[in-house]
Image (cartoon, rainbow, N blue to C red; front, side, top):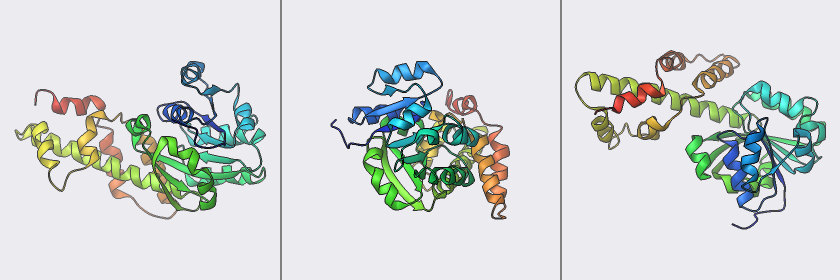
Length: 275
């Protein structure tokens, strides 16, 4: 692949989503810096052309675009706004993408601090899961100034398949929360339905094949045994918090939250054993 632009990119957080993004950027010829608290992860991506940074501050100072992929709201605030964080050294005119799944309030807090430094902020939530990340086919849900988004589309292209601008800052996180509610709701309903079918004497493998040819077909149904079920507690808790801000009750989400506590990767695998 050839270089796709002249901007440098710094990526913070080399987990299941961040590592592939950094590697796709480097493979496309983009000068890519990375930082993770786990030095072994930085050594791994260095073998793929990514440049390890000694600190977050060093990464930010060298980057035109900074991509943050850390787990929690507090992690985002620490990485972006605390001493030694991105905004301590970020260049005026640079762009900061919050790609973590967090609340809109967290994005706005970061943006307020960034504005004082002349840094633009986009919230750019990831959907598609680990398999999409590893294929460079992330679906990106973005909130913020669309002109700023347009200025970094070249740097998004190597690791995304689609990019949707949903509205002002925070809209990407709203989109991700809506996505998560649909996903976990589908998964809990599918597991419940297949358990019922199994107990009534029909093999889940046969049921799934039949359902995939009808209106119940979904990616969740097709790929459920490949899912890690890592973030349902956080995702559903964020949805509840966000709903509270607009006085919206989520009765289905409350049921899903309870149902997901009774579903594990092992439970899903067991549905198909010997069927």
